[in-house]
Length: 481
Image 1 (cartoon, rainbow, N blue to C red):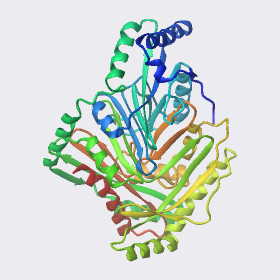
Image 2 (tube, rainbow, N blue to C red):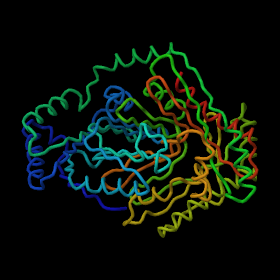
Image 3 (cartoon, one colour):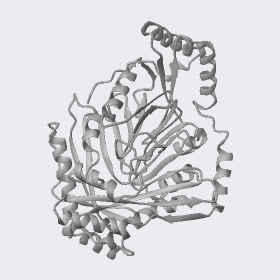
Image 4 (cartoon, helix red, strand yellow):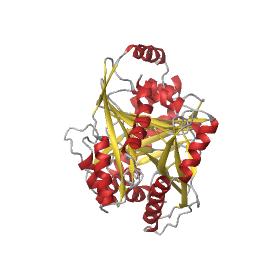
């Protein structure tokens, strides 16, 4: 795990905000650094504050014309979110992961961090999302192939500790008297956040109950599965994951915050995520699948493949789980994912710790075969180096990787965009976490496209695979109404 490049000053938020003069002196130091380096500096101030539900704060400061990001695991009592941009960067093409890495490392050398940096989720965090493919076939697709941004306002909660971070640009032209006054009064009001507009937002959410949804099913999924099965029989590839998309037209405005709230309540053991482009489009979902997590030198990823519905009773649920564990088709599909991830890690000299048998991951409407994979993170390796090699795993792409990714676009009649791609964050110390953006939806003002997929191997049944994707799509449909 590569070392931090951020300049940190051991000044607590209590000292920074002890007086307006202290805040002024800090900004003045940042300005002097900017002049010395002829480079704009980011003053990053972290502060512990009273425990507030981060989604409620996110709702208050959310703006449809600002980039926004939300990432939560309720079962781990972890959430991080951000609004606005202090820094942002887009990248395209096959080297997009390395370009994002270079941007982050270059940016870190021009960030000065102070405050309560001993707490989790403090200091600058970069939020990123990538499309499934490194090129978009739709020329006007609302998200770039790779986007990363440092938010202007960041909030996070970790196991009962709530922190806020302000990332503020300072250069030679900055009026630091005015800036100090502004930040001072903002902090005094509510530790960076103004809660006055929460009632208005809740009233808006109530109005959404009246809308009607028109569902347009694009079709073609079963036919795509049948074609893929013929290719598997001809030994063109071992496994391919095919997605299905459903378009929804709403009579009223779609609200990503309303959908987020419903998802987080119903799916507490999934990643609840949302990112927006600042131009009226949001991408959100509830994914059970982690792509990678790096924390304090420990690496964690997982294999998630093989599915069955939940039972209506405890006995039926257990029987379905046992059938899944003994299913030749599902265990074969699962083993392909494990072997591929282990092989890709080994190319970096990383020997993974893998349990001998999968467990069952139970979600409200579906259960999966699940195998956690752990390893030590090499000191000289960046999380984005691994991300570039792990994406896409056979759980969302196929095996072999290159062949199946080419085939996917022949079988699917829509742009995957951010579906089944990495979404997550990276901090200034090299830690980070990315989920696989499955069970997801792209939202405009009145239009949504819902995505779900299924893994196809030699023993797959087109009717059962269609039932599986419809079950997964219901996750998003429930969140819209």
